[in-house]
Length: 311
Ligand code: G1P
Image (tube, rainbow, N blue to C red):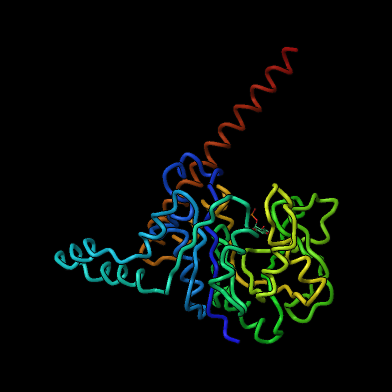
């Protein structure tokens, strides 16, 4: 069955990016000149998704405005004959069928996915999380969809992470492996290093059979007092089969400040119009930082020598 629908939960408060997210959703923070959420929608559309449902919360109206038609702006751009940017703006509002449901209580990712049950009905569907920006030749979601068609089983995208980071993610307990596909024996949400079954972390891309909804209804609140999608997947992999695909591509965790800055710089470097000037700026900056640091280090060493000589 074709995967036509995708769920994008955007209800989170974005507390890690305060004060920037006090009056705007974190999903609207730009990576260069495009809001982060547009990268997610573009990935879904490029993977063949036809309808998207955003699970929103308070303070998220600008996401709806962004994907809506902006008549005044289009008229203005037309008058000023800004043809290229006009085309880009028009394209955003015609990208996909977009729907919105409000998640009334902040009960976590599992609860957000459950809010989409009526919209999804009885077909397999995709979930994409906005904190994970994937840049790859073949869209990450398309990689999962192709795996779903081969295996006919729910699929989650994974990547290896450093052991000290396992407690930030859902971590799988992998079984046998064929090519890039692992069978999943179990998974655990945000384990302590000592309890992590592997270093393979769930990367915010899922293709799920609709049976996930019944598992979501039977779990209790988990980590962070929230309904965790990982806990429902745990039930799913006990009752039916679940596989994990090693995603190919670069992933940025834009829920993290350094991850966000990396995404901003690397995406800009990939742009022809920005590469030259940004690269020469960065080269100069690194050079200056290096010389200043070495001056600083030699001053520090000198001071150390003086103080040890006088003691
Ligand atoms: C969520 C999921 C987690 C997954 C992560 C990927 O966690 O619960 O299993 O590994 O996204 O980014 P969150 O980052 O929303 O706490």
